Image (cartoon, rainbow, N blue to C red; front, top):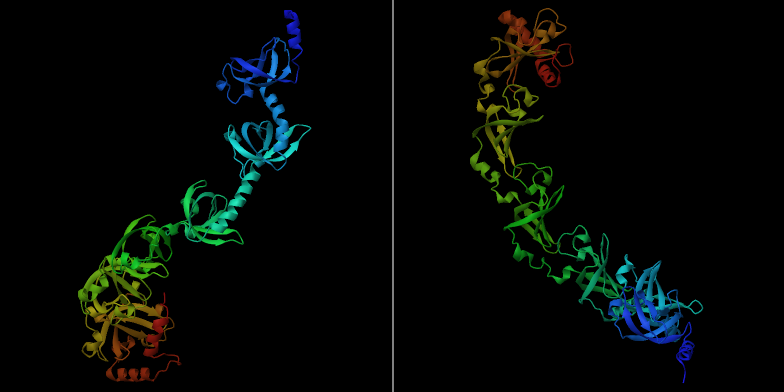
Length: 555
């Protein structure tokens, strides 16, 4: 019979470093597991060799590799992983030839990639994790995937894996299958892969399709990101499939009915509609009536009477408004709207309220070179042309008579509804004095008045009834007058004699020097004036009046 010492010696000779033996768990500690392998000392396995040390229980049995029979504390150093690696290596070499496929569990993140347990430890480079590698590799720890073996180094006993190649291979197979199966009109599930300014690329589980921005919504979209986010799952409609180029066109709005199909029934011409201002442009405002349906309010349809330079002067983006449907073009998907039609057109009532001949009052709102604009009511102006300001005076600019904001009276002369114009006159408030000029003045009359204007050729004198007469420079004095301003001044009272009346030209010629003439002298002077021609030293009264129209006053 063997003694105890002999039995222990014989037992110790059956254990050697590098050998694989079966062990039984006898205790689980925080960072290690104690195992009995039938040796004189217990063995220790580091806790990180287990997927979850909390799941290890006393009595569990598994193979271990003896790394050292005794450490400093006299315990056997064991490795469960190395036992599995040694047992599996030959099997792995047989199964996992380069290009083969194997399943494994991601163990931990290391520099440049991941360590994967496929029975032995293998390395998965970060670039081979996925088609688009995740930013945080830690999210994959503990996950189980299939991998392709891309490289085996027998001498170093390491293996390099790729998950990306398997995914690409699977996608290629799915892409080919999808291209064969897919037809326009199909509704497919997909994931938003990428967003650009012109649309979004949708992953259809192996095949990418383009969802163009114009096919996202029947309504207005500024950018695809307003509707979609990367990673979002959506249902899309297949619009077109190009098998040769492997391109698929997708649509999102096609899942809904085209809102323009029955547009005339929804928004009949003449009806009042509500909407929101979605865009302002120089020529008008776009109003959304419902998703996918917009109408244009042209700038000319904003007001009956106000001249609006740009829509942004009266409208704001996002503003809720009411409008009237003016016209619909379903083929071109256009709706014309009007806001001014919500109110009565004041020009429809203008003829009734202001028939020609009506005397009206108002404020001068604006002055132009050709006339003055008088406000009849808010938004409705009438224009007094310079020729309708005075019967007798030559008015070159309305500012000679009016100032802005003056309250005046006028007579309605004409209403042009088509062109939205009302013509007014001030001189029509009184009778034309030239109609009865024979009763007011005749040649030979002695008249008095004030000098109103000086010109190089003479002076204008204001007479009664707002009539001006012209004293030609030759009719001021018996002596030669070189400059009119040397003998006369504006505002000066003068006495003169009427020496010429021209009804057709509405002009009166005066003579200061003839104020004391006898009848014989007056007749002689009138004959001399009648004989004058524009090219001579003295110009005729008619020529003088014409010169007045274009000449400048003497200062």
